[in-house]
Length: 280
Image 1 (cartoon, rainbow, N blue to C red):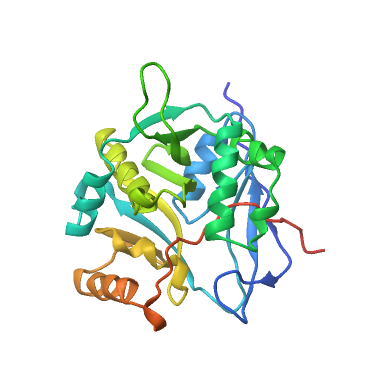
Image 2 (cartoon, one colour):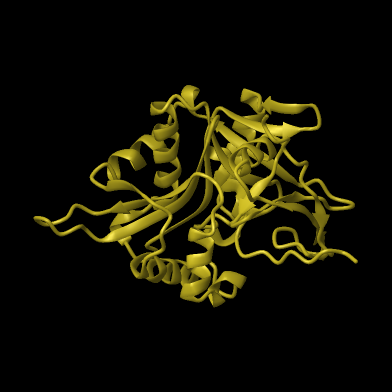
């Protein structure tokens, strides 16, 4: 007789300052992923807007705000834009490898340079090597790290310029956390390339979606996510396709130069290094 699957217990965090929209607070509902059914639970929760952080699955549960919207790219219908085609061509010499979820000093050093340049002052800048190892290795689900390297010389591997911790789900790839070399001037657009490569990988494996986490309209550092089409978002009635006209408007807004001609060069992140304190 098969043992019944135990329904997970959910908890709610205490409110804390929102990292995306100034003046607002955030709250999360979360549950622990563990046991032999962790993969199935993670996939089921992912389809209703949850994200994974180590052994926890969470989603926003804010009292007076619904700005965080889960989005996923429809991989098997994706058509790159002209600029995305240029990005693919510019980095088509990179060697991508699927590695087991095992943290390395090389990955950690790359992450530190990335955080210092792209997220100075962020909570993850204080991450020690042991914390990084926990983020990568404490996974109860099917995960791997995709490394992106420049061409090697002989038997020596090339320089590591990018990496992404990725969950493999039954309906797609979920990008948990990506980072890349911020000092590689000849490698402009590496963050976009890593997403494009995941879309390509999902399509090649017959997986329909690439999950990008939460998109927040009004948060400049989250607008890079809407540049991939077609895309679906999670609404009250379930996943829905973003219409062509609306999507064009969102892309135009995302690529519009900001004041002073400066646009955010680095996507914001969700799903990493969060504190989960239960409301008493």
